[in-house]
Image (cartoon, rainbow over all chains, first blue to last red; front, top):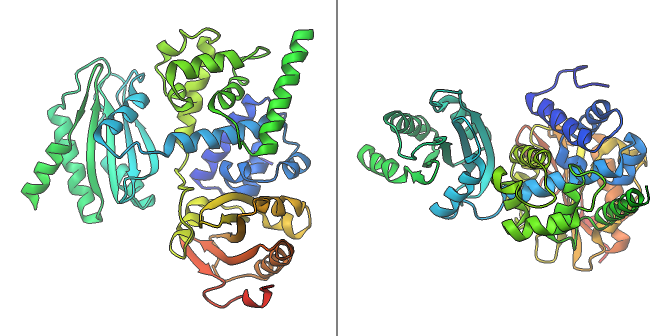
Length: 213
Length: 231
């Protein structure tokens, strides 16, 4: 059985790919076939992680080391994505710095949040080597709608450079604000991670909001 | 060869303990020790895990650490650093699921919707709810496996071994199908209620999820839960 035998969503395909990687690390025999069978039956890595292991051993010949890495993956994801990373500007900066500091090219990360600043989803938009990453506004707006987010924080890095926003950074941020406003989604902040420091564009966003309001 | 067997035996034991306990009682360095099994073959990863936690403070900080700082720790290779970074990047792709919610008529449909998000599988999720209305544990299962008797009933009952856990809520994923209950949804509901009732566990509701909409079998009266009350 493979994931190509029938129509699948892009999310299911990505779950299959991630499951393949986990099973490969665990040296699971026939890791592709097993990954396909697991995702077909349970739909997500999280659901496999929450399933009875005896059944998985019997029906899918899942190894102990495979189940452990699946459970560790979900446990670590929950730890990284939960918590109070968005309860203050300093925590947000620290969170994005840890994600972006080692990236050799400009990369944009969008954090989709609910009204209580709890994270619903993170999404990464890779930059283009050698040029500035432009904010893919439509993609971000679509992802915000899909995750039912009411707030959004984006961040990108300036590899090896200052965290000061360029004119392009400011204009694309304001364009994103305008795009999100009719959708009732607030662009809360845009954080730039520089080589040695960070910059929050929240003041710029608030000033623009006042002017528009 | 003797050393290899020693490590293999240790790794198997710690993995088994992890699966049997559901991860309860495992401290951060033990979780990290197990994660390092996948990038440091045939070696004691316990001390390396301790060194990493001591240096970076938490397992999350280890996963997000600067690669150049990471490889300075004794016992860690560049390959190990690459594995941890890649593992962390994969973790970031997961949807955040708020497991600290207070179970209510408002929160539980949203929780199930998040859990089943875009899943095409015919799965159910049983949530064991504690006395404070929080999620104690979860069990996902394929509905066909359950109705065929492939799942040991002990898996369900053991979720409620904590004496402060006497309620269950069940979500059924209909994916793109209608949210109206199907014959097997009724069979599942009846079977689970009858399985759990002798252990004083009450099934509070069964919800069907499809395309972001939810259907409560209790609220709609589609299933009479009251006639199964043993009080």
